[in-house]
Amino acid sequence: MAISTLPLCYCTNVHPGRSVAEVRDGLERYTVRVRDAADRPLAAGLWLARPVVDELLAVPDGVARFADWMEARGLTCHTLNAFPYGDFHGERVKENVYLPDWSTPERVRYTLDCAAVLARLLETPSVDHQPSSIDPQPTGSISTLPLGFKTLAPRWSTAFRLPDEPTGPPRGRDFLERCLDRLIETAAGLDRLREATGRTIRLAIEPEPLCLLETTDEAITFFASLWSRAEDAPDPRALENVRRHIGLCYDVCHQAVEFEDTAGSIRRLDAAGVHIAKVHITCALRLERPGDDEPARATLAGFAEPRYLHQLTALAESGEILRHVDLTAAFALDPPDEFRAAREWRVHFHVPVDAERIGPLGTTRDDLRGALAAVAELGYAPHLEVETYTWGVLPGERQPDLVEGLGRELRATRELLDAL
Image (cartoon, rainbow, N blue to C red; front, top):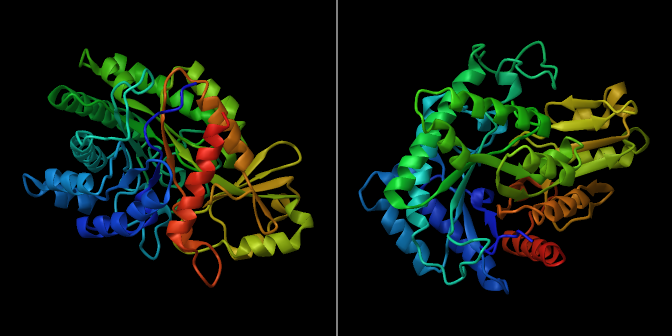
């Protein structure tokens, strides 16, 4: 069984972190308290926004002092979330979370700066981790966006029909090639870091609905293109670097929203040679027979909110997957005829992973069970991270207690892992 022996973690993008002081405050107020209330070790899955990384690197000992601060509180870190570049807790994030995309030098610089910070954090001694055949030496992982958002980029994939009016600036037709070259450049930088520090850090590209990489088929095709371009690159080590340092982050919610068999998806990625460096333990909302259940659609309308993007898919009677860019109350209450007639809807709204149902709405927790069982079959151990970042926008007059909610999620996740 290839389940990592490293401590389970949750992603700290669930609390604000726009400065080093704010990151520390979140770790003190939430992570330490969740850890102290648990009966098992807990690591910190850090989200470090661009301003935070800049602040840490602004002085020679900035990262060392932060690592010492973490160690003093008994916190370790082996994975970062470098998907959100800027403020993930602003009034409106939506499609801005996909910028800068992977065609830009800014995304490369940010990722390599995050890797430099993580390499130093990996030096922190961990009393919680005992080396094993599965985790002989802790490596680092950094999850990142799946190149860009489809409505902000050219239609190199036919899996999604773009709207007539893209919502962002147009991209050149060489967008994919520029992304491939930026990733090859990033892999070279990560390998230089490995040679300098002895720490191997893997970038984990995270497919997501309506992004350039959303389905398992697209991910497999993309990695084949990446390996081919690296093989033809001037640097003779390019392919070796890419194979070592570029993998995939498997977000279970995202693939469940695609109506994919998550266990089968993981096995297909493994058979294609795509390394799953990280697994986001997440669940989506689901609604069966939406046209027949007006009360459930009314409940779903309450999940429409202005901060994050909540892509919606529908499984038509024909088996076709219909896609809608963002859940709105108006769409839920009065959907177009083809969506109303669908067998099932799924919504990219990360809900607590311990929830089988939320009122009249179902969740994709069964998909999570299947995914974790497939992960246990792998010949290596991806990092595992609970990533429910939506606690602050869950519907209801009173927001749930974050420490209590995270504690329930982690306990439920450990129960699923213990049952494997």
